[in-house]
Amino acid sequence: MNGKKIAVSAMLAALAAFAPAVSMAGNAGDAGAPCVCEKAARRVYERGGLRLSIPQAYDKLLVTDILGEQGGTLFSVSEKASIEAAKKLSYGSRGAGWIFSIGRVDEGRRRELLCGDMSGAEIFARDANGQCYVYYHPTDVRYVRENNEAMKRDQDQWTMLNEWAWGSVREDFLKENGLETMVYDNSEVAIAIARAAYKPDFRYTVSTTQYGPIEPKNFDAAPFAERLLQNAVYERTDAETPDGEYVVLAFPDEGLRYDFFKLQDHENYVREVRQDGTETLYKAIFFYGSARASVVMQEWYDALVAQKNQ
Image 1 (cartoon, rainbow, N blue to C red):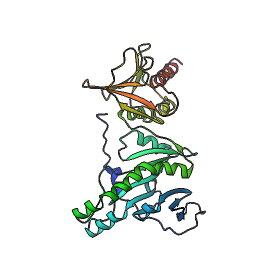
Image 2 (cartoon, rainbow, N blue to C red):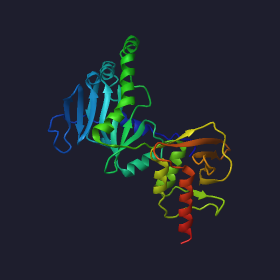
Image 3 (cartoon, one colour):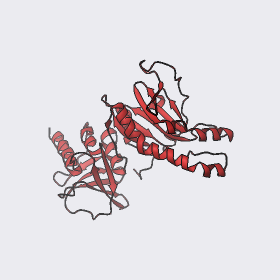
Image 4 (cartoon, helix red, strand yellow):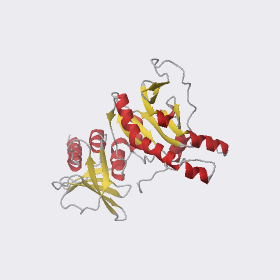
């Protein structure tokens, strides 16, 4: 793991090249049938029982595609004026004006996403069947106009639509569909934890001064990883590095380790140490409950010790 960034051009290309929208005809009660209806100054787009609600004032400025879950994508929303401008400029309309998409992924795909860089993708919800919902967004600018004058003229509109999309869409989608909030971090720390837990061939060790490093064999670390990753973020901090003992999650083939400090009131501090000696300190922030990262890592280690002694 030499830095967080992993090539994501294929994923971005797939997001930009959306498949054509399916027909909007059909009964909303039919399984999987797409539907568009009006509701209290909002336009509601439906796919397979899932609803995306857009204020009428914004909807008239947008093109919303109801997709057939190609690549797990359900809805795709773009600015209409950018699409039209791109066509006039002979740029083609695919990807022009794209603001966001909402997709659904199963457990396997979720784990796969967490093991790499997720630039342009944010997991934000989970349903009763354990499927997660992803908010996809551009990592570059998709705003298109025919000339600079038009760009300046319509900048406020583009900004307004993006602020709405980033600030309100996920919360509205959660409420509209009765979903559970579920957020996963994608920091270097989180990627390392996910790879250790979800990639069977990815070599790692966990260690303390008690018994030294243990390299797992046929060990399911997912329950520990989920406690460390669900509804949590690992933020870089300029705080002073804690003293005392720590649990080490190490990746020998990568020349990389993470020290989870055990000092009281500092159990959520994690130090990243790279092969060249570079150190970065993170602090875990858990949105719900009172989880402590080093406590979970100690339990992970204790379980490995118990398995080894069987």
